[in-house]
Length: 67
Image (cartoon, rainbow, N blue to C red):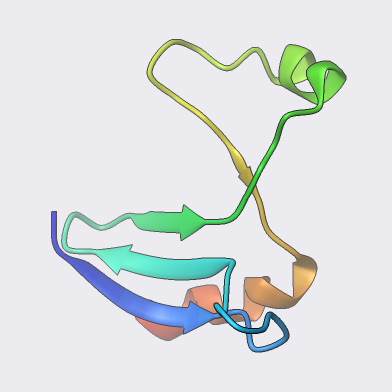
């Protein structure tokens, strides 16, 4: 998988994380905050081999930059 950096969170210092990447497979990779709230995880029923991360609303506009 080849990653292309689209955007780091400009309001996050010093690491610009969360971060959005576009892949060469027509998908996105998101670096964000670990979701560890037991109620949230139970509600999502995440299957084996998957996970989730949290990103702020301010990152959503960056999704269209990689297309």
